[in-house]
Image (tube, rainbow, N blue to C red; front, side, top):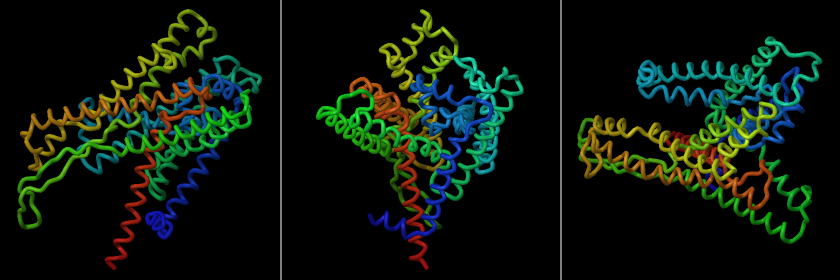
Length: 440
């Protein structure tokens, strides 16, 4: 409670919080600005029948901007994709990027600039392809024009949507500089949270007003209470897991302290249980959804034998697709964890700092020791990701929830993770102000 009071007493922190909320309002208002020349009702109808998989996740991350086909329909997804690609290319694939990574702040600025250029390029290509695909699926989105669109029309709309993504990147930068938290993460969270009221309203309509054909009675009230209890229990569980980490003890031998040398001092390396974050789930859903999304854009293909087999194989609500889904999450969890936490690099840094893990020789043995710990932790983290990612599937089957009402899932992982980091940042900024006043 005292931390909350300290936040309200701190004018600088309150200004940053208010600025962040203002940015959220601007973001939400932009989701209702449709791009010109198109019939948004056609795209809305498409999402009403295809609200799961990568399309549903993309729409949730953009705050329904994709479903509305607004000027920010792409969100900052292209920037996230570009960031992941650049991060992977730094793994001895492109030597120049690795050199920039080792140049400190100057290299970091070069990498950020390259990432933004790549994001703008990806946004243009994605907007061009997506608009063309939507126009080819079912009723055309240009029916209101009265003429067939040309390449110039597609290019114009792609430029408009690319400009929307560029605007969101600028807005996220303003949040980072003048607001609270990482701007990119906060924009994603704003889009997800903006959909929560609609989810609660749908639950109330289903279980209290019987808007979806259910008979309202004691049984429906009990189910609603059970769903809400499970929802808050999942939030608590995710919060605990996102904050959990394994401490690897290390010791510094004869570490310099000023002009003197002190004896060995103890410390530790924290390794998060879920060091890969939500990336494995997003990758798994993306790979599974690409074939089925392409099928939806091809008229008549979904009803064919090949289309039925593909849907069985790549739809994670089906038994075979779910098995592939789980395997992909485990594979990406291990891959991304070892990318984020490089045991070889950690062992090298420890050796350079004259540090060591008690009972383990420096060098290769330290690398193997950290790799074993990371492997065991990643098994727990990947299992946790599978459990959270599977909750919406089983909750929908058990409670008959609509596809847009999810207990757990990718959105909850993102919101909880960003909330924890933002809370830490607010607490740190409040404490810094208190310390400066004490020194004065």
